Amino acid sequence: QTQLVESGGGSVQAGGSLRLSCGGSGNIRTSNCVGWFRRGTGREREGVATVSRDGTKTTYANSVAGRFTIFRHNVNDTLVLQMNSLKSEDTGKYYCGAVGRPFGENCRLWEYDYSKWGQGTQVTVSS
Image 1 (cartoon, rainbow, N blue to C red):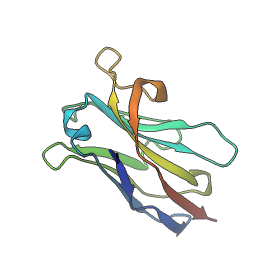
Image 2: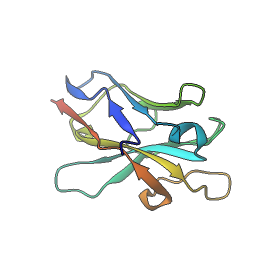
Image 3: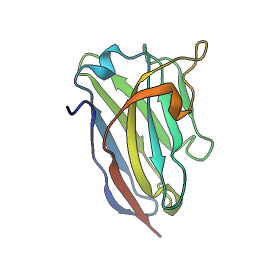
Image 4: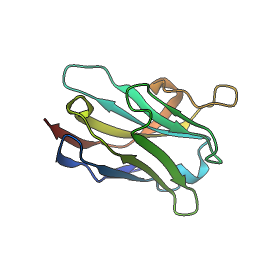
């Protein structure tokens, strides 16, 4: 059963932008924490950005802060990641995570806090 579906990946040159979307089959709307994670070639999956249920608390990896923006549309059951000023090191497969467990008032960048995942969408940035 498909639960989360990512879209919007592709190939861009360094400095370009992409906008990723994740449709949730109800999972975005009902989750406390949701977020985006990525796995580069030969690397572990890492947290990129997370957002709280009401959308007011966001957390970003240091490597993307100031360049990426995460937001959620609970009414539309959609999670979005706007990626600007892309770098070659942003290359990887990006995954949407939902049903995230909050840590206090925050949503961590730790993949084991999340129990539902999409299949991922590939982002390739060429320098």
